[in-house]
Amino acid sequence: MSSIKDVARRAGVAVSTVSKALNGYPNVSRETRVKVNEAVKELNFTPNLLASALSSKKAGRVALLINLNMDSQAVDEIDMQYLSGAISTAVEKRLDVVTIFFSMLRGRSVSEIADYFHSQGIEGIIIYGMGKEDRVLQELIERKEFRIVAVDVPVVNEVTSSVQIDHGQAQYEVARKTVMENRGKSVLYLSGRPDGYVTQERLAGIRRLAMEEGLSLLIKEGDFSEKKARELTFRYASGYDVIVCASDLMAIGAMRALQEMDIFRPVCGFDGITLMCYAGMQMNTVRQDFRRISELAMQEMGRLLEGGSGRRIVPEYQIIRMQYQDVLN
Image (cartoon, rainbow, N blue to C red):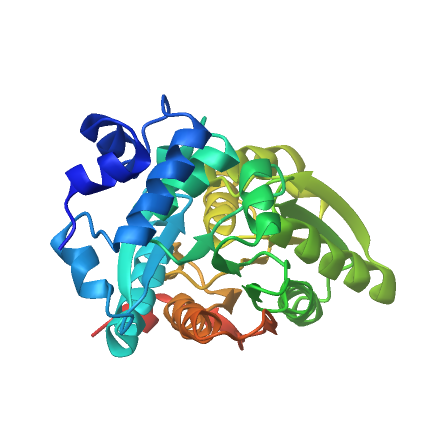
């Protein structure tokens, strides 16, 4: 079995340089990384016991790349459902999984990120929460060095698949249900982050509804923030019949503001998180099965690793009315 010294000798570098290259240190040149990676492949060198277990090719190593939201603890539920679905499916498919957060890669070039993934034996990446401004990740997808499944990103190529519900249609349906139930004629719409792919799709859905039903529509950026939604509701809600929010967190913020203002306006959300049940009122929302979405993403990753081509997968969703009793045992 080859050792790290053998790799260093083959690559013509020091042992410490091999270690730095394999662990993604930024102060190693791309030329050196290439030499080290080539030596690793030629010698079939495995840096640790886990990699040795993978060398039989009976399993593949997949990175779960998560954009952890540091602004609120409430959305941890979504990330935990993603992790639960991905890991359980990976076990069934004998795929090794590592979790990496966007913050761990911040400031690195696409070449440095690619070298880091290669050094860890990663063959596939499932990306959760990528935005339009994540240029480095977009370039990583375009390079086609890894099998990639992008959740909530409508990007597909030969080695990249997309997994996401039809956000535009879902937004249209939940908003229409709420407007029709309350005979509303005007809507205050609190949208998500401007750089979000899902934000643009949901905006298209609410605009289609407003055009078809002749609704007066005011759109304000809520940034998926409970706090900002609360502030916008205080400022604008009294002049509109219905408040449509592009996330449950914003719906909760809007509802809290309405309670403090002591006025009633119907509110609907998007996502179907458990916290919605504690908001104090029943609300319509779009329930996404985040665990199932992640299971589908991992299943798709297995197919890509076996040589399949990228494609778009559209999971199902439900329009529901969430209430406190939904979380009682």
